[in-house]
Image (cartoon, rainbow, N blue to C red; front, side):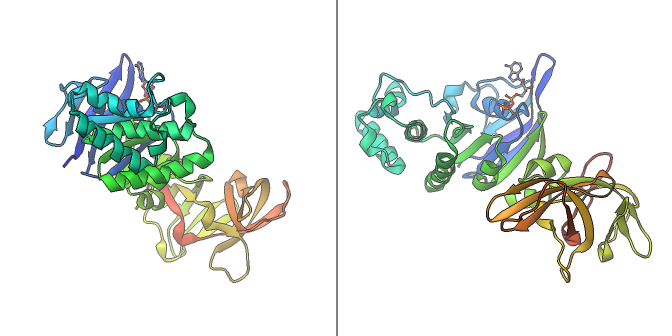
Amino acid sequence: MTSISYDRAAKRFGDVVALNDLSLEIADGEFMVLVGPSGSGKTTALRLLAGLEGLSAGHIRIGDEVVDRVAPRRRNIAMVFQDYALYPQMSVRENLAFGLKMAKIPRSEIDRRVFSAAEALGIEELLGRKPRQLSGGQRQRVALGRALVREPKAFLMDEPLSNLDAKLRAQTRGEIRRLQRAVGTTTVYVTHDQVEAMTMGDRIAVMSQGRLEQVGDPDTVYSHPANTFVATFIGSPAMSLVAMSSGAGAAPALTRGDLRVPLGERGLDVPGEVIVGVRPEHCRPWVDGASLAGPFSGRVEYVEALGRETFIGVEAADGARFVIEAEGNVRIGIGDTVAFGLAVGSLHLFDATTGVALA
Ligand code: ATP
């Protein structure tokens, strides 16, 4: 059983606070994704867990053991990097076996583990090849295999797919998840790619500037973002954020210029300034009879036609910007005017000063 916990873990490099009081519990067998933009502290969090950096403050526990002062090789975890780090002069078989030989594992046990990892990864026929005779995707599998044969307490993966092209990346995402489910090993996976995070994580921990902004399962983080940072970082195209005024009273509504969004029964306890968050799927072209607030008028700024849907960026009243999601291929030009409606029940509201989600 390997749970992992960060308890107010912090790391400073001189004046730079790379990781700020991270507290995070990862359950046994869980696939936890650390996601955030460049410089948000994800790699630092992973390197602290691996023991490649020392903590400035706080504690880290792997299983029952506080590992703050435990050497990396004694932590019994396996790290997979984006650059694979395979030994070029060794065959795939030797690459897989190398760490086990160094650890003086008996020959028959090494053979068993290498065969079982190769089988799990579907690379049996590559065992005799050298790394230069492999494609990027195959090298990535060998790198995973090297982690797998160690039968570690946990896998730590730092952007392991970033050297693969888009199609292979999508395929390998699925393979890593299948493999991890099959072996049940606790995994901490670092990426800046929110699609990777959403599709792979049992839970995702969203980070920014060394801080944990929110942790939760992908659905929860997507539908209940804790603040405007998470709201705009998770989801593509990003959620539109529009500053509006809220008025309480008989007919509570959000207003900005001649935009007026009736809140109906939802109401708002506190009148004043709020930030309204609208996902593209909740901002639709206007059709009579639809249960949307509107119609509002927007001037088209850009069009992204993806075949199955079209995203239309518009500027509406008083400079408010929205992204409309329309079905199919929509023929519309930049500068055209489009009528749209908002799904009031699905709007997100955030504090205008702190950006924190309002209940
Ligand atoms: P990326 O996706 O670009 O790898 P990240 O989220 O993994 O980013 P970290 O690599 O953890 O971010 O870096 C967090 C912060 O700490 C950054 O501001 C970075 O410049 C700083 N940092 C990281 N390592 C060091 C170091 N060895 N010395 C000084 N500053 C560092």
